[in-house]
Amino acid sequence: MAAAVSTPFSIQMLMILFITLVYQAYAQLDRETTYVFYLQDITRGPNATVAAVAGIKGRNWNFNTFGSVFVVDDPVTVGPSPTSTMVGRAQGLLVVSSRDGAYVNVVLSIVFSSWQFNGSTLELQGINRQNENVRTVSVVSGTGQFRFARGYAALQTVAYDPVTARSTVRFTITLHT
Image 1: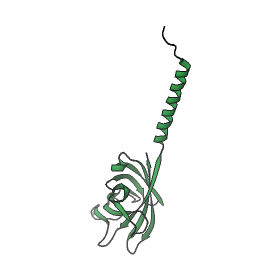
Image 2: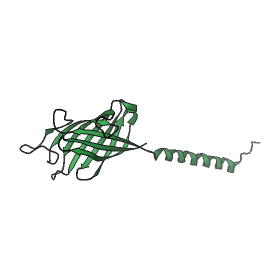
Image 3: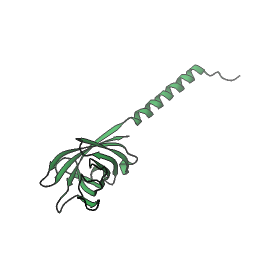
Image 4: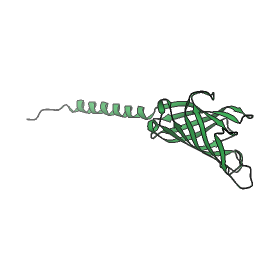
C-alpha cells in the first residue's frame, strides 16, 4: 500500500510559497531611485556649450523661434556651482517645436565619464515646456549601470545670468527599478 500524503499541509505550503514569491516580485518592481545632477549651460561666447545649427531661413535662431535647432554639450556636475565635481556631459539636440516657441523637444544623452557611473549613459526625451518652473521629460533608456532604465527627469533652472548667458539647471532623475 502507498504512503499517505497529507494534502491540506501540501496545499498550505504551496500557497505560502506562492504568496511569498508574488510579494517579492512586486516589491522589486516598485522601487524608485532618485539622483540629482546639475547642467552647466553657456549659450554665448568662446566657451559656449549650446549652439544653434539650423532654423527657418530669414528668422532669428533662438530658443523662442519655431524651427530653431540647437546642439548641446553641457557639463554635468554633482552640485550647482560651475566648479563642482563634473561627472559627465549632457549631449544632444534641442528643437523649438511649437509655433509659439513655448515648447522645445529635448533629446539628451547624459554620458557619465567619472564617479560611480563611469561609462554609463541615461537617455532623456520629451517636451520641455519653457514657461513652466519645473519641466518634466522621460528617461527612455540607458547603458551600462542604467541599462533598460525607465523613469522621468524634473528640470528646474536654479540660476541664470543674462550678462554671461550662463545658466544652471537641476536635473532630478527618478528611475524605476
